[in-house]
Image 1: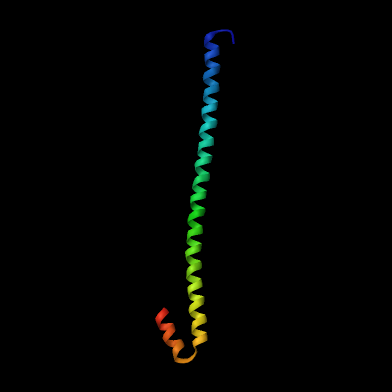
Image 2: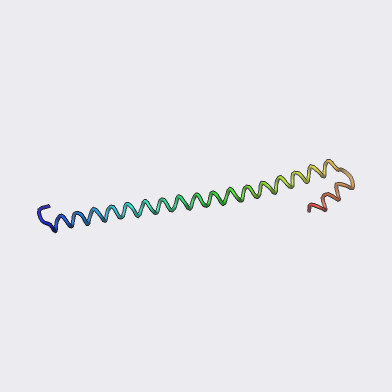
Length: 79
């Protein structure tokens, strides 16, 4: 690296490599945030589904506890 042009070429090459590394890092970071968002959505969906299961379980327990004609009335009310 004797001349100014050689030094400039070297610096431009290094800056290009750093830019590429930064672009890769940003892409990985964006990918991680997308995974986090997907996971949050899955958790919300599972929580909602769990609420439905709890409601169904409570209805079944109430129907079993009521017995007879009351059971039929309860089932109709919840279905």
